[in-house]
Amino acid sequence: MASIRRAQPSEAAFLTDLALAAKAYWGYSPAFLASARSELTITAADISHHEVHVATLPLNNDRSTGSEEEEEEEVGVYRLTPLQHDHDQRCDAELSYLWIRPLRIRQGLGRLLWEHAVRRAAALGLARFSLDADPHAEAFYVKMGADRCEEDALSKSVPERTLPRFEVDVQRALTAIKGEGEAWIERNEGQ
Image 1: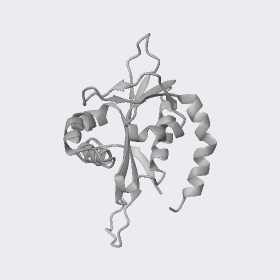
Image 2: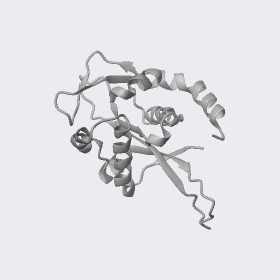
Image 3: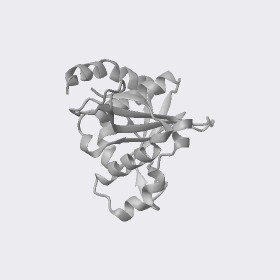
């Protein structure tokens, strides 16, 4: 069963590779990925100063390592970034990224990370957060209950590219997942 933990600064390069692989899954060209690399880079400082969490699954291997620690496969990552509050600002945080390892897409891990991010936002006392979605992930965020904004966001790394922008009311999202989340976990235990 998947678990979620805080990312470690030493995982920055690996998590960057995970993000790049997840982006490449959608058929983007190498040139596009190169232009987006800086935006997809996860640094040790990001991990140290922000809410960066990793979804893991136990590694299936037949050999016992004799170690007390169980080996794990990192299968997803998200970053929730509290923002400095501005009186004109509607949101007090941003879901900066949520990436799933390509071989693990469509296995419920995106929902698991989403629910964790919403619960973490509530624990931090955040009221609303925003996110700029990859167009291929737009349907996922709609399904999760995020509200599509009228204005799109400009890409931070690709000139003239716009991205769907969403806002999430944390309490409404938390209420929506309370019953659904536990039912989903029960349905997917043992998978």
